Image: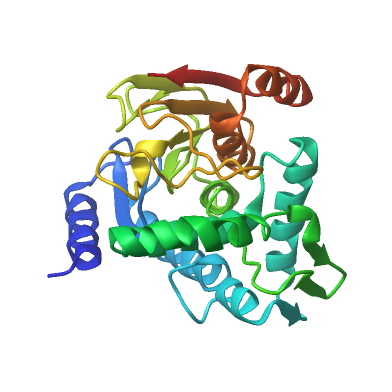
Length: 306
């Protein structure tokens, strides 16, 4: 039994056990390379079955656009070809949004860091001799490909200015997907929900009438999430390239360095899209940069846990 199938059975078992409108209805699955989990109450079980299927269909649609795990996704096609004509408008919209955050954060949020991830993954799979050669030769070449300003978007095209560039939307797409599913559920009349697609969004309250509560897996700490707020977490420990955790997936775009592995950045914001982007950004920012960014986004709350 694979992981996705097991998770789906778990969600179905919860559905079967819920008979009253005030009980918590839950569905779980796996999208964008991460566990998806959303909980609602205040609606009937039959309606929830219908709406959860609609939510999963919407998530698969977004995955076909933005996933790095699907070689046929729009994003993977762009990374292979370096240019796309007439991609879906939603794809162009999220890239424009991400580039906008790049401008507002002084380049600290940069979707063109994918070559660094690719280099470090190849480094991980190499022996010590090959690593030494790579560090002296190809690291600088990969770093030279990082610059969000070299991604050009028009009304119907997106293109890279340099051959070999590649982008990742993993620093924003889970938040975007969270907002999309929350909006879909709200449009369908769901009064109370906690959406988790790697990032969290809350509406209404938990079944006990209190605000929803989120437990951070990296620290075990619990954070209250008021209605209408979203939460995102970034931690270097989420994906490391060496046993010691010296190198991980959160890169500073200017030089490719990593943050502390034992540091967890927690951001709450009006949207999960914003929370997602800023949790990554604030994780690599120094104290002075953090002050500037938080002044730019006064609606954001930030904390660092070590």
